[in-house]
Length: 70
Image (cartoon, rainbow, N blue to C red; front, side, top):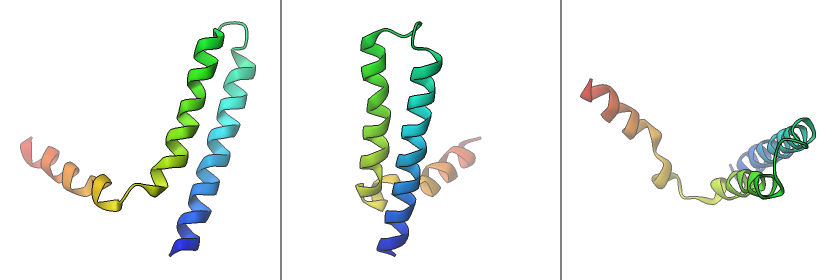
Protein backbone atom coordinates (compact mmCIF):
# COMPACT_ATOMS: atom_id res chain seq x y z
CA UNK A 1 0.00 0.00 0.00
CA UNK A 2 2.77 2.45 0.93
CA UNK A 3 4.75 1.69 -2.21
CA UNK A 4 1.66 2.22 -4.35
CA UNK A 5 1.05 5.64 -2.81
CA UNK A 6 4.73 6.50 -3.15
CA UNK A 7 4.76 5.49 -6.81
CA UNK A 8 1.63 7.51 -7.56
CA UNK A 9 3.02 10.58 -5.79
CA UNK A 10 6.28 10.33 -7.76
CA UNK A 11 4.35 10.10 -11.02
CA UNK A 12 2.10 13.05 -10.11
CA UNK A 13 5.09 15.12 -9.03
CA UNK A 14 7.01 14.34 -12.21
CA UNK A 15 4.09 15.21 -14.44
CA UNK A 16 3.48 18.43 -12.50
CA UNK A 17 7.13 19.46 -12.84
CA UNK A 18 7.01 18.70 -16.56
CA UNK A 19 3.85 20.79 -17.01
CA UNK A 20 5.40 23.67 -15.07
CA UNK A 21 8.53 23.66 -17.20
CA UNK A 22 6.49 23.53 -20.42
CA UNK A 23 4.26 26.40 -19.27
CA UNK A 24 7.26 28.47 -18.22
CA UNK A 25 8.91 27.86 -21.59
CA UNK A 26 5.79 28.63 -23.62
CA UNK A 27 4.85 31.77 -21.70
CA UNK A 28 8.25 33.05 -20.57
CA UNK A 29 7.73 36.46 -22.17
CA UNK A 30 4.11 36.79 -21.05
CA UNK A 31 4.29 35.71 -17.41
CA UNK A 32 5.89 37.97 -14.82
CA UNK A 33 8.49 36.66 -12.41
CA UNK A 34 5.89 36.78 -9.63
CA UNK A 35 3.55 34.47 -11.52
CA UNK A 36 6.39 32.13 -12.45
CA UNK A 37 7.17 31.87 -8.76
CA UNK A 38 3.51 31.28 -7.90
CA UNK A 39 3.24 28.47 -10.44
CA UNK A 40 5.63 26.44 -8.30
CA UNK A 41 3.01 26.38 -5.56
CA UNK A 42 1.12 23.92 -7.76
CA UNK A 43 4.02 21.55 -7.27
CA UNK A 44 3.99 22.20 -3.53
CA UNK A 45 0.31 21.22 -3.41
CA UNK A 46 0.94 18.12 -5.50
CA UNK A 47 3.76 17.09 -3.16
CA UNK A 48 1.76 17.62 0.05
CA UNK A 49 -1.54 16.03 -1.00
CA UNK A 50 -0.34 12.42 -0.69
CA UNK A 51 0.32 13.03 3.00
CA UNK A 52 -3.12 14.45 3.81
CA UNK A 53 -5.20 11.85 5.68
CA UNK A 54 -7.75 10.12 3.48
CA UNK A 55 -10.60 11.16 5.79
CA UNK A 56 -9.96 14.80 4.88
CA UNK A 57 -10.36 14.17 1.15
CA UNK A 58 -13.27 11.76 1.08
CA UNK A 59 -14.68 13.00 -2.22
CA UNK A 60 -17.33 10.28 -2.40
CA UNK A 61 -19.27 11.82 0.49
CA UNK A 62 -19.18 15.28 -1.08
CA UNK A 63 -20.20 13.91 -4.47
CA UNK A 64 -23.17 12.09 -2.95
CA UNK A 65 -24.25 15.26 -1.12
CA UNK A 66 -24.06 17.29 -4.34
CA UNK A 67 -26.00 14.72 -6.36
CA UNK A 68 -28.58 14.26 -3.62
CA UNK A 69 -29.20 18.02 -3.53
CA UNK A 70 -30.12 18.18 -7.23
